[in-house]
Length: 260
Image (cartoon, rainbow, N blue to C red; front, side, top):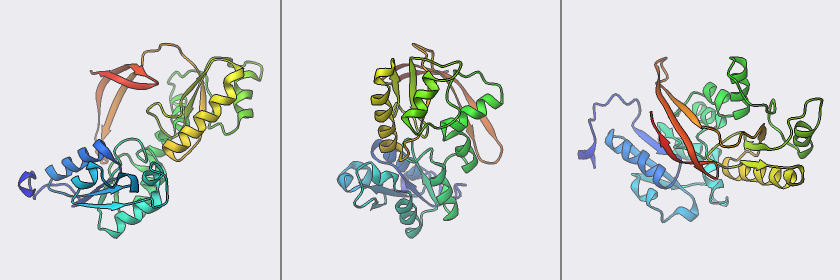
């Protein structure tokens, strides 16, 4: 295994990394760790005890006992405790699950473990989509009409869409505040299906991200979905990776990304 590693004199500031994810995502993190000469740690739910990513790690531990198959990977307290008890220096969250959760990054920081990803402040600003929207407005980025913050009740949703002197009206889109990937997103075409879609969106967001918070925006039909990805090294060096067109989607999930 070590013959595959790049160099034991690597400048990587840690020696044992945990992939706080599952499946192919976790396997890729472990492969990268191996190439850097790191020891790798995997986690798995009871239902995943026979899956590939468990056996790709140097060490693997079951988490979330008694929780749902998804809930196991959202168990912040259990994952941090497992990392701390087993000498993990750094945790890579992959994407989805806890990757955008500020409270996960903070819990790791307090435990003296490096979160491989944005800073806690970055996640406060951008992990919560309502905070990111507020920041965009603050710096003058055009946005479609939407709620000022999270919406927690059906009454709040209906008031935003239908009430006031200048109601937004239908159609609208309900979005999970704490995640992406098409989870917790529902297009609402009319008032008679608002309650159903509100309940579906909040329950999907809670199951996928451990937080059922949602927000609402005016729905834009057939838009161009353009992203610019930004990378920073935590020391003030920041670059962008140009633009990518992610407009080809199915169920609000990207199918093809064209870059740059």
